[in-house]
View 1 (cartoon, rainbow, N blue to C red):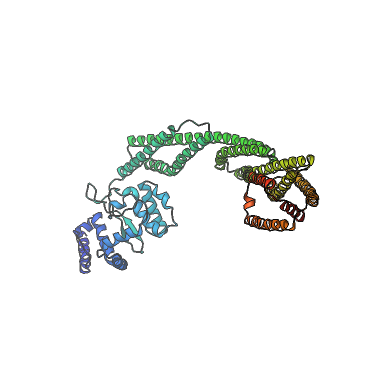
View 2 (cartoon, rainbow, N blue to C red):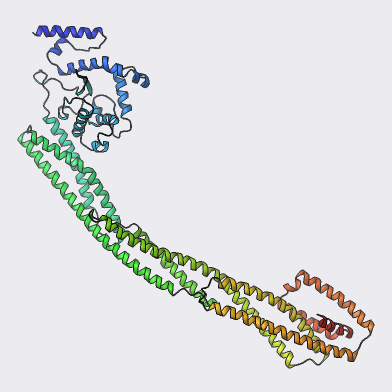
Length: 593
């Protein structure tokens, strides 16, 4: 029988050689004796020649590769490009952790499993996932278990079955101690993988415990508690991400115990390790959740206090605003109002920190009443936000009003005071003229000159009064209608207008009186026609010059003290140098104008 087997295998190997299938160190005896390594190598050579070569012919051209294995390796690299942690350099060690095999499957069936979940598992669990998914979704028969693979080195190879299905098999399954091809024991392999994963998990767990223990006591300020809450939140997210790994380790230990292939001491060690891992994990999780609950309770209390304090502050500020509605009615009051408003603005800036803190409010709600709690809190915060916005808008608007009034009102009062002072002086002078009528020629000339200058000044003061009316309009438009300024400012302007009108009447009366006096003197003293003509000519020249000055605006630019000085000079000149015909002509002109 053995002879027949050897003969049959020899004929098959001869056919393979005729078809250029590379057979390296493979004899008929190796196949008949059941050498798993050489038999699988033979099968792999057959697959490469009749299946892989045909499938990868186009890929070889695209990747510019000539060797089949190099082409397949390049294709695997290209297919798994972009998967974190996957670096395929060969068909041995690059596949030991199961990442490459899962990435290859996921690239063609991404909807079958979540890559990030599988990537967090330990190598045995990853390989188990790959074999299971390949069998269920790709039709690849599961011939091996992950524990049967030597994880330091194995090759991914496909076997073509009679039904067209492909199987995954290891390279490193050599013959046993008896040379009969029996698979090596997988107990030490599974246990060592479990120990490595357990060590990694315990190392992380120790770091998480230290991280939780190093967290400071719960603070008493809202911002500090929020920071502590967010720090713990990062740890809780890390715990959630690691929970699957903890479960995988515990599951792997349970599987080893369930199979009963370990020695008693090994089983006891695994039980102690599993208990220790589970206990420390639960203690860490419970402590973290307890701290989270305490932080949340403290934070809610502090935030509720903040809300109540904000409500009281808003109410007090609204009352404060209600008492600040009046503006004016004097510049002194305006300066006080500006100072009070600046203090209000400082208080708003100080309160802005609390507003910002509440805008980042932390709330943890139960799933049962989360909608109602969140909706109620949102409505309350929206109402407070509207009140805050109203206060800010009112403050900005009133500050703009105060700035405008600060610009115009002092100028108004300054101009008003100056105009009143001028009126008082002129009224005093005219009362003196009324009480002491001019009898001498010199006095009459002085009175006439003063009245003439006064008429020119009255034109200037009338323009000043018009400017005051414009300023009053700019002021009153920014003042509430119920303010007393709407009564005092128009009343002050009306008083000035009445005094200007009265002054005009007095000047007209004085002009008429001086004209009458001059007419009488003209009749008594008389004068030659020649003198009158000469005087009239000189007066015309003088008037022409004066009119030019007036048109150029030089008279308007003269201040009051210069006009008074000019008035005095005219008095002296008229008293000592003016001839009688000019005197009569001067009063004639007064009468004409």
